Structures are given as C-alpha cells and as structure tokens.
Amino acid sequence: MSTLENRPNSALLVVDVQNDAVARAYERDAVVGVIGELVERARAERVPVVWVRHQDEEMPAGSDGWQIVPELRQAEGEPVVEKEYGDAFEATGLEAVLAERGVGRVFVTGAQTDMCVRSTLHGALTRGYDAVLVSDAHTTEDLSRWGAPKPAEVIAHTNLSWSFQKAPGRTAGTVGSKELDFRAD
Image (tube, one colour):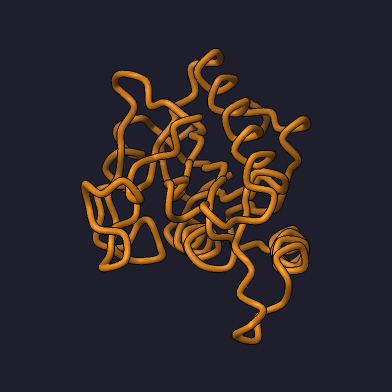
C-alpha cells in the first residue's frame, strides 16, 4: 500500500469545515452531516480523526469564521492542524501527527473541493500516503461568476479525476461514505 514504512493505519482528515469556509458551500448541511457521521464511525472504530483548520487574512485565527462549524465537535485528544496554504501538509505538523499514529492512508473530507481538498489529496499522494477522497463528503462554493464551473460540476469532476489517480506503490481513488471501510487494504 503506501510507501511509508510501518504505517498500517488509516486516518480521517476533516479539512477546513469552518464557519466561513462552508458558509456558502454547495449542499452544506448534507455534506457536514455526512462528515459528522464519518467522524462518529471513525471514533467508534478507533481510527484517528485529524482536524485541519485554515487561517488567512479573510479568516483570521480566533475569529468566528475560523471556528469549526458547530455541528462538528472535536473530541478530547483529536489533533487540530493549523495551516496557511491549500495543502494541509505544507508548513504544518500534519506529517508528524500522522506518523505518531502510524498512518499511511488518509480519507479526505471537507472544503473547498477545488482548493484545499484537492491540494491536500495531491500533497498526501506525493508524500507517500494512500489518499482516498470521500466522494460525498466534500464541497465548494459557487465561483462560476469568475469562470469556474458550477459547484456540482466541480465536485463531480474532482470525484472523476481522483478516481483515476495513482502513483508507484500508492493507491488513491474515491469511495462513498456508505462504502468506506477504514480497515480495508
């Protein structure tokens, strides 16, 4: 599986499900609900849940918009990785958090599909992780007025393109939340 030695475990990454990041997100409530179900399943199966939180000029640390949405609650001991770039691995402690837990495969959820989710998937795969996108657990806002496709198309295209992603010694792909098996190879 992954090219990382002695990393047999999986983790659930919850990327940027923060008030401002999902305020105008496509199917926000449904996606947050699916992520909440996955968080509970991961906890029940003793799979690490790792929270990723973005900060920048528009979403400064400590602001209401920077907070993780109230529907999702971090449990005691679950790490929060603070980031300033799209890729959650870039200039953060995410690698150390995952190494400490023996994680070689990440299941990625969150927002924004076409920005931080996609960057984190690529970042994981290039760093040796198996990187799986949960197809119904990510979202984005409508940026079509700036030339982007509509959100449903962005999500569908990302699911399609990531389902064909692979790298030597690593796996990638997509899985629906109902079919996700944290323990499967």
